[in-house]
Image (tube, rainbow, N blue to C red; front, side):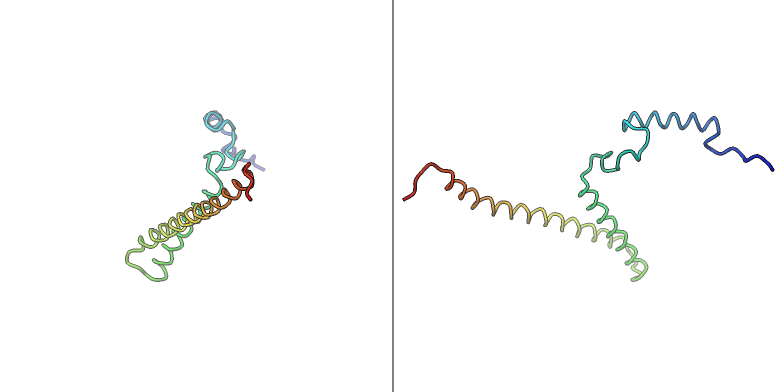
Length: 123
């Protein structure tokens, strides 16, 4: 039986390349492996932002596929652009609604707190 051929990991040049890669990676991330920390932590991105970006990317890809394959559109580029803009407008509307709700609730709540915690006695 013939001996097994050497694998890429056993080659001497491969070890030097691997050592340089690990050194570079440790200098950037503080770790020898990418998998020690999730991508969001490496990039300092909030999880909800990553989820929104993935949703927008998925909607853009699906709209491109739908426009080009199913509808046979002559210019399917407009489908992902439209999908991305609609998603961004929806996120913007959600933020605007949240700010409105907080501001509407803060006014009466502040007034009630002022009445409760004030030192004046009302007749």
